[in-house]
Amino acid sequence: MKNLVNLSGSIAKKEVLAPIKSHILENTYVSEATDPYANYYGQVPQNAKPNSIFIYTSKFYFLEEILSCTKGAKECIQERINIASAHIQFKGKQYSAIRIKNFDDYTQIASLQECLLIEKGMVFSPKLNIQGKVEARINKLFVLEEVDDRIYIDLKEDNKGYFFHDYKVPADRFEQIITSMKNSTACKLFDAVQGEILQNGKVVEIVRVYAEGLELKFLKCMATEFKKQLTLANIQVS
Image 1 (cartoon, rainbow, N blue to C red):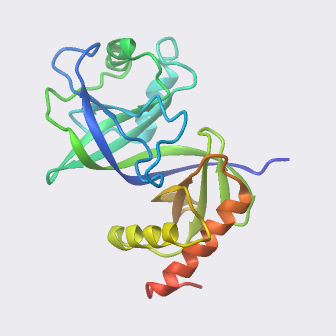
Image 2: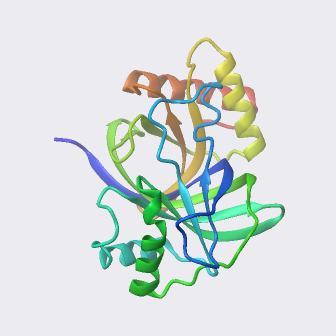
């Protein structure tokens, strides 16, 4: 029997965004990630699309508000859609958004906006100018299978896995560690970002790994190498 878990948490990542100008409601702003898994060793993964869509809102909506909204709007939201709340950091300012994945018909974005507007009265942000590199924090629901101690496979998104650890790593240090890991001979061809998950009332640090044909052996390699790099970076490990 599979060891399945449903956890809420967030992923912090850098994105490159471009505006979507057609098939959206008037006086709203929508963008999409143009370079998913940009750090996948300089290669574009297969089947990376459809990309993440960001529908900007005038206020921040908590994840539970958005998930509650989708329950009452099934008639216009595709079943396999992946929806989350998001903070976008751009040029020193923070913007709120709803992040949509697996929405494969871009001509229906306006219909989706109307559905969210009618069902929950969501207030969308007027015209913005957010494009280029941003820092995004995605607040989402994770559906995972535990395949080893503190190692998980994503059951909603292909080729994604996670390992949990105990130490808060600054963003710049994390990038240095991941670069060192890619330059080693142990684990290659991957994209990794860090995040946090709420488990048993406690915040747990996680690393999300993307790799084509992801397997447990590779995730265990990543977790071992990451711990080794933490030691080399003088970040205490147990």
